[in-house]
Each structure stands twice: as structure tokens, then as C-alpha cells.
Image 1: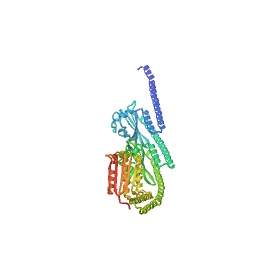
Image 2: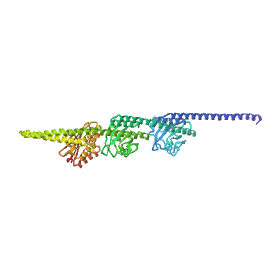
Image 3: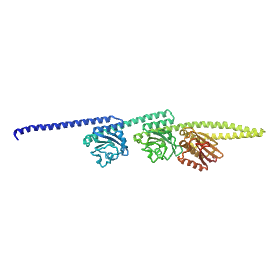
Length: 576
């Protein structure tokens, strides 16, 4: 090569090197600008997520920001439940129509479960090549590249971010992983803040509700109103569909929802349950809230129980008064809804304490009213004995002494019948006096049968929707032994319960008669009768009670047709 050619080549070399340097410098400047833009986007995403305090919105913001930051086609956030499966699954990039075609949301198997089992960042070029992958359901969009990172809240894995299909590239790069991991840290803080805010708001709601209940108690509001207020407040705060207060039936091994509010409340109120309902029994003996994620699958309940019809998640807390469990506060959500959390259930204990206080105050008020009533009954009994009986006795003596001055046989016979009627009237009044005075102890076992029957009939009125008619004949308080009286109350309770549950009656007549050494309880209703598929265990119990006393049970239609007529008849030897 000539000296002139070599000179021209040497002149071009510095220029080529300078062009390369300028290109490299421009590439680095562009990269720096891209990195700066990405850092700016990351900061914007962190600030956007941190501004939210509503937890559902926080979760939605996190997954939306993640999709934008790493330029992914699809994104999802899976929240891990107590069972280490996915309790929630939020998606971006799949519309409602596609989601409907795909079907049920994932529960945490395959690649999604891999991050649950091993909470570390996972980056894949091809999803299907991973050993944990087992394919997609029908109608699911194709996905290849994958990036997943865990979200931790206070060193506990809250959930995972899943990103798929990197736009413009075959796979996510390490920088994408670093950006997403940084967002996950900020997301954990945002989730914790949202949870704290939610718990604070929840505490404020419980405090307001407690204040309302306390005001109602101090103002002397009737206990049923206070209990209804308690259940309504608790139901609203924990977003339950049904709220109930169940109590033990005094002196019996049975439970009864005192009342219910919400879904099918009328159907549930007043049901008499066997004391063997395992869930309620467990609540009564529990020291902490007891939950069931799906009461339909709970082995502790009776199959096909009306009490739990239509319900899924359930939570219950005991009502404890003076150190004794007197009932349970139970809240339920319809089948398919999310189970109750510890945040939902925790404050219920304090609220249940207020319900127990309301029941205890109601008992004290009933005691005070009972004392006043007993004092009034004592006065009535004293007046009947000292005034009415004495005057009737004197009238009878006068008529008896007058008889010898009457010559007409028919008139004399009428006088004697009148004297006999007066004697019978005196016996009835004495029976009434004895019945009034046997209530002095206030205990059910010492109360007269007349009063116990009346109370049982009154107690059935709310369940029936009307007050049954009641007739009582004979000296049931004085001549019917206590053992037989206990059987009568049990039989009457079952008969009224059947009328309420099965017959659809609009009227019920209760007739208790003691005459000629025989006690007869007749319960008649105008409903549709007991269905053929109804449980017969209750009727068998009534038959066994009658048989144990040498009596009978008869069940059939009313004499006038239709309805149901139950006759329970037993021989009785007078008490004493």
C-alpha cells in the first residue's frame, strides 16, 4: 500500500472509534434513561399502592401496578388462606366473559402452589416445562413466560404475585424480578396498613355498638329489644346473614333459639333442639369463639336441621353470666360465602357478655315482678279464704238448716243440691288458693300444674304466631302428683311444637281435664296435620310417657274433620 493510502486509512480509524464510542455512550444514556423511567414508575406504583387504605382496593392496585411495571400481558394476586390454599385470586388481563368460560378460580395447585410451598421468586421461560406444571383448564389463554414473587406481611407470607406473557420478549429478565420483588415489599407494607386501618374501623364500630347496647340497658329497655339490638349490631358488623341467640330450656336438656334475625328468621325462632346439637353444645362450653367454615359439612350438627338451613360459614360464642353458660350467640353466612376470620370473631366475646348481661337483667326483673305477683296472689288467697269461703260456708249451713222447715220434697231436694254445689265451689276455691300459694318459692318444680300449663301455652305463642286457647278443668293443682305434672308439661310442649312446625295451623285449642281419677290432655289444631315424612320420635316419646303411667295416646283428625287432635290420657291417683 502506498504511503498516501495508509495515511487516509489512519485518518478514518479515529473517526470509527469515535462513532463506536458515541453509539455506546448513547446506548448507556438510553439505558440510564430507561432505568430512571422505570425507577420513577416503581416509585409511582409504590406511592399509588400506599395511598389506598381499603384492603380490596389495595390488592387490586398491587396487581395492576405489577402488570404495568414488568410489561406483562396477564397478572394475578393470590391470597393464601389458613389451609395453605388460595383463599382469594384477583386477576388482570382476563375479562369477565373469559373468566366465566374458564370456570372456577384456581385453589393453589401446580405452579401457583409451587410459590406457596416455596415462597421465593420464580422466573420461567416456559411454564409447561416446570415439573409442577400440569396444564391449564379449557378456554384458558395460552401462557408461556412466568414471573412470581411472594408478598410478606410481618415475616409471614400473605400471598403471591403471578405475572405471565412478557410483552416484546420471550422471558422476564432479572431486572423485572428485582422490580417486582421491590413492589412486593411495598405491597406488604400497604397490606399491613390497610389491615390496621380496617381493624381500627372495626373496633370503632364495635365501640359504637357497645355504647348503643349499654344505653339501651341503662334506659330500662325491654330485654327482647336489647337482645335484638345486640344480634342486629353483631350481624351487621361481621356481615352475617343470620343472627341467633340460643338458650337452654330451664330444667331440660334441650336448646331453643330465643329469637333469630335475618334470613328465614321466623322459621328458625323458637325451634326446640336436642341438647345433642354438637356445634351449639361446643359453643356453650367454649372459652373462645368457635367457627365452622361450612356448617353443612360439620359432623357435630343433626343432618337436615332446620336451624342451619341455607347456611355455610358459622361462628358462635357462649353467653356467660355469673360464671355459668346460659346460652350462645350464633352468626351465620349463606353457603358459599367466605368463612369468618379471627378479626370477625374476636370482638364477639365482649358483645356476647353484654347479651348475657341483658339476659341476667331480664331474669332479675322477672324475679322482681314474680315477687310482686306472689305478694298479690297471697293477698287474693287470704281474701278468698277469710271472706269468700267463710261466707259460702255460712250460706251452705243456713240452707242446710232451712231444709227441715221445707215440706215440699222437690224443694228440699233442690236445697240439698244447692248445698252440694256450694261445697264443690268451696273445694274449687280452696284448690285455687292452694295453687296460688304453691308458687311462693318461684321454682318451676314447685309451681302448680295450672300455672305451668299456662306458661307453656304462652311460650308457644311467638312460634305459632298467635295465642292458643286454653281450658283447665278439675283440681289439677291439688290432686295431680308432681311426676304426672312433669309428663303433662313435656307432652304439651311436644304437641305445641308439632303444631308450629308441621301443621300450618291458624288456631290451637288446649284442654286439660281432671275428673273421675283420670287426667286428659287434648290439643287440637286446624292445620294440615302431621306430614307423613315427619320424624316420629317425638310421638313415640309421648306414647312411652303415657304407657309408663298406664295410659294411652291417640292421634287423629278433629271430630269436625281436618286438622289434628291429640289426646293423651292417663289414670291418676290423687297426690298425697
